[in-house]
Image (cartoon, rainbow over all chains, first blue to last red; front, side, top):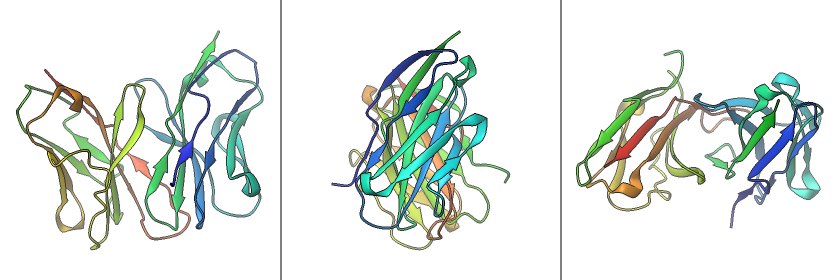
Length: 112
Length: 115
């Protein structure tokens, strides 16, 4: 079955800690990969995206993600989190330029 | 418009009543999606419209749910005989569907509360 898996449902970190959120997908077609973020009380917005080329992509606010095709993974990383990174993060896959499939989300709580 | 617009932003309704939620996508976007976000449930796909193709309704949870998209633009999600478990945030998104290298843009959502 087609799916997007986010293994961490709730992550609690202290400021300046490093972050890595896992995302795995199971699709065989052409995929575009995304991370979306939802800050408290705000709508979902794009954090970063991978379409092709360099598998290490950089997004806003110091976030980056690495596409590893052999592992069907697209993990999100940030070397040093801030309190303002407290949000819910969603991994998404667009298959064959069709609809988007989302993971179940990871709630990140950064303690000041 | 500048972004995806949803109305109303909040809706409180009595159990058993019908509700209509509206989505106005970004002008020119041929693809439109409805998702439901419940506490602890992530984003649940409901329905997908792409151009003039038949919509993908595979995510609709029951026959009480329906959606239409008129003129390839505005979409309405209708929930008939609402139940308390329908309480959630309903999100609409649009994109340049069918094309490579596109992203989905989300509206603010409609928070539905069934009492």
